[in-house]
Image (cartoon, rainbow, N blue to C red; front, side, top):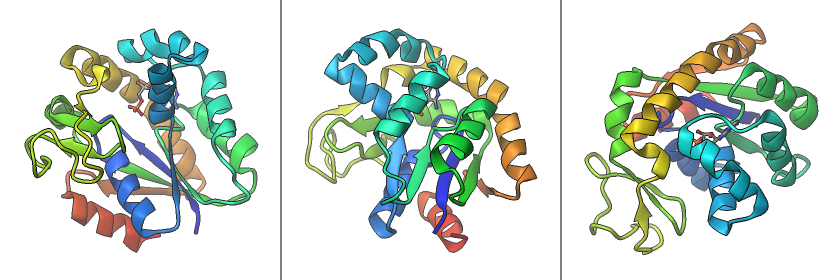
Length: 210
Ligand code: AMP
């Protein structure tokens, strides 16, 4: 199987699909956003450095992100889903040249009308314990405030999922993504899926084509 590169606006469903693929296929999920939030939670030097960047909705530096990728992957052992990386053309080229080297990869673009995402993000809650993702309207946990998967009771609304930061994140996404899509398209490695499908339909679409 190829390494997968998930490209999509915040809230387009990348993390949810990655979670499903990991539990049903032999893949590992690496989300640069999760790694960065993990550093912030630990209050590590790196976490302290990047907190204000994440809070503003801007991107952290390419060098810092590639360091995190190198430190958290073992390409000789595992097949990965890269979620939230690459975010710009330079990162896409670095992923090919310095991380994957000659290993095959396929980019999956989660296409969706950005206007529909604000509602998804303002209602998104993430389990602090296991990372499971919920939507208070369309996919609420069975028992309010309790994670279905791990039973944890810390379902949080990410700071950067607040309305004022979401707009900035969408702008950053719109400005940087087209060159990344063109790059994968020009090398015949781009698959586009309609991310307005239900979670299950989207999963079928993606897994069918792997
Ligand atoms: P995400 O969870 O993927 O939405 O990422 C949350 C935030 O982490 C982004 O708004 C950026 O500030 C930062 N981030 C995540 N991935 C990257 C990346 N590949 N390059 C730069 N910044 C990133």
